[in-house]
Image (cartoon, rainbow, N blue to C red):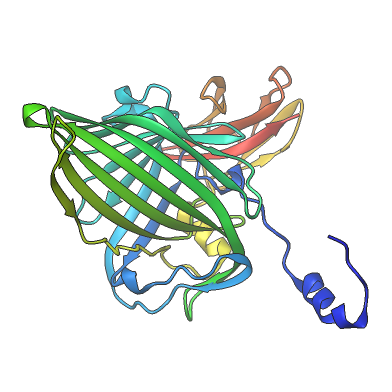
Length: 360
């Protein structure tokens, strides 16, 4: 685009100069092993408008005063969960505890350039397993679109259905996010995701039942915070029974669930407060990035032994070392590691925290 300098364009140039830089959505927004994030679900969430798309937006998610339920998401190792055998490629599990609902387990694997979603299971023996993983690729710049499809199976008890899913993720806006009289976040990113899923279940006399589910999600992320800060969603479902000859025997359109869930973190007064709410800092890394060695500094008194583990993004353990209460730091020799991005996990008692480290 060619810019013609004239007095008439001075207001436009002023707006351009004062516009906020476009933040980039990358791996730094994703939770890591050891993170625990709490959210609250607003009642009457259907009244919440996701607002407009575009640059330099001012999103205000307000108008609700009562809370329906609480959500806690803990990011744990898949081996510590009851459904790990269904997802052998997963290296991370998001364990969700929701008031009044069965516990959910979402399984992922991560690299420095993508996150793969392998499937979802719930206590009560409900298992979604993706034949091909849903991939989120990084980085995403403003107005970028990612789309694709995957197939899989849904098993409820002994009954198995097959599904095909199409998805589209769109980085459709950035700007300021606030909660109406509460905290305000600059440089917020919004990702809009559309999901269409068709389930197919065999029925009597050669017929089968098809269920079409259309989902719409909006998630807001804030620079410096892992995990989304707020989300809105809605779901529409239709179901039909089709005879062996192709005739439609029954059709039902369920009311659209305007369950646009708005989840906002507890006690949010600033980005730093949100980070503290996600998890207290257990350790710091000196030498990031580095080539030869990195130093691990505990951020708390050590009353028992601490274990430090360094793993590649595909889950391979590269180094494991312990430190005792008599040490105030630990030095890790990493010169032999291939260059790349690694996860440094710090285990103290029942707490685990992970951070990214870059090997030069």
